[in-house]
Length: 421
Image (tube, rainbow, N blue to C red):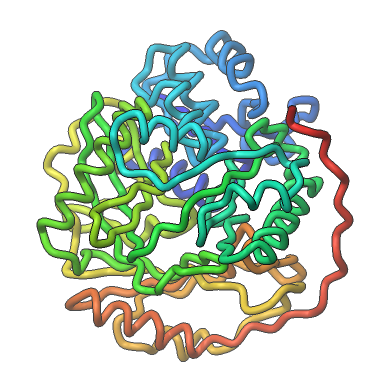
C-alpha cells in the first residue's frame, strides 16, 4: 500500500515518517512544496505542491497519483494541502475547512466561542492599523499574536499601552519579513489581540477517529509561561494533574476539535488550566513537531509515527498503551541571536542519570533568533525516569551541561507588506 506524506520539503521529521512507513510495509510517497520547475532538486522524488493553492495542488495530485491508501501531514501548511488531497481521493483525514480554521487563531476562537467553550476577549486588526488606536480596545493584560504561526512565534504579552505599541511594531516587522511574504497566507495580514489567560500550560496529543478523540498523552509544561514571550522548553508526561483535571482537559479538547470540525487524524493541542477550568489555546490538525514525538512510544516501543501511519490506512490502534513510567523532552532554547558555531558538554549531558538522548540539530553557520521572531530550536534532550519529577530534573541538569557558541549575525532587511484589506 502507498501512503502519501505531505511535508514542507525534506526535513528530519519527514524522513522519520518515511522510514516508519517502510518499516511497517507501506510505500511512502512524498508531496512537498518544492519547486515544480526543477527536476527533483531534493532527490526525494516528491510530488511538487503549492501550499498557497492547496485545492489546485490536490486536483493535480489526485489526477496523477490514484490508488493511495492514506494521507498524513507533517506541519500546519502541509495539513491544509493534505486535507484537500484526502477530500479529492475520499481518504480519511480532517476536512479542509476544519484544518484551515484550526490554523487561524481568529477563526478558531470564533468557533470555540460559538460552541460555548470559555474564550478570552479577543479581536483582530489589519497589520497596517495604528497600534496607538488599537490599544484603546485592549483588555489588560493582553497578548498580541499573528493568526497563522505556531510554536509561540510572534506571541507577546503587553501590560500597558507602551508595551502594546512595542509588541505590535515587533510583530508587524516579523510579518513583513521576506520569509513571511513568501507564504502568501492571508491570515498573516492580521494581528490578534486577546485577554491574557493566567494558569499553567499543558499539551494534549491525540488521534481523531470519525470525530472521536483518543488522548495519547497529556504533557505538563513545568516552566511558568507568563510572558512577555512564551518559549516552550519542557514537555513531561504523564501529567502530574489529578485524573479529574486530566479528564476535564480531554473533554475540553474534544469539544474544541468538534467545534472546528476535525474528524480523522492526529491533533496536537495546547491549553491552560486555572481555577475556572480548561481554556483551549489551539488544536492543530497535525502531530507534535520536530523530534518531540520521540518521547512517545507505545506497547513496548512502537513510535508515534507508526501509530499515525497505521491509523491513516485504517488499521486499528485501539490497543495502544503509552510506555512508561515517565518521559520528557526539552526543546533546547536559543540563548542569544547569531550564527551557530558549535556546542560543548554533550558527553556530560548524556552522562546525567535518566538522559537517553541528546540531539543537537543546529548546523554550523545556521542563523538563529530568539523568540518572538525565532522559529526553531538548537536541538532536543530526551529523558526517562520513574516519575515526571525525576524526568524534569534530568532534563534541567543535562541542559546545564551544554554550552553553545555563537557569532554575531548581520540583520536581514524587511520589505513592507501591503494592507490586508
